[in-house]
Each structure stands twice: as structure tokens, then as C-alpha cells.
Picture 1 (cartoon, rainbow, N blue to C red):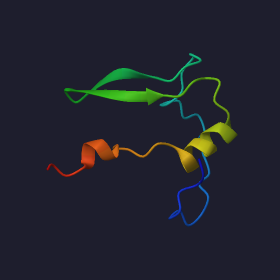
Picture 2: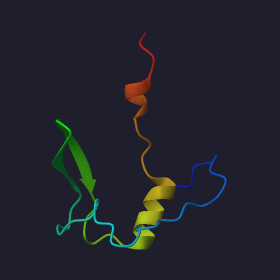
Picture 3: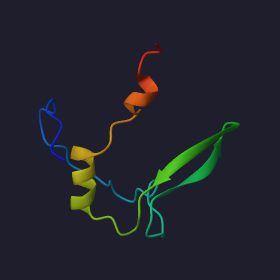
Picture 4: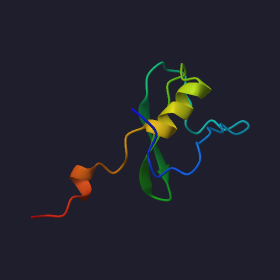
Length: 75
């Protein structure tokens, strides 16, 4: 996969200091449920084996969301 053609500058991954919202102790990606103000939210978690270069590669070439299948107009 190449970089998105309309991306003006390469994206950089910034993990932030002491930011653990998207980190966990497992070697696979997943989700955890968090209850906030009466709503249940799903928080995505990255594998603990992910490196900064891997994260930057995903930022540059990752899968678009929402998928075109979801946003395609109804026929």
C-alpha cells in the first residue's frame, strides 16, 4: 500500500507522555468497554508489540473508516 494521494505531509505518531488510553498488556489489538456518563464506549487498544514505525505506517496507509460499504448511497 502507498500513501494516500491527497495527504499533504507525512503523518507522525505522537504517543504523548504517560498516555495509556490506547495501550494494554496484550500482543493483539482489541477493545475494552468503558462506561462514561451512562453510555458504554468501546476503546480500541493497540498491541503491546507495536513500534513507533509500525504506528506511523498504519497512519499513512491504514484502512479508511468508515468503510465505503457503510457510506455508499442507497440504490
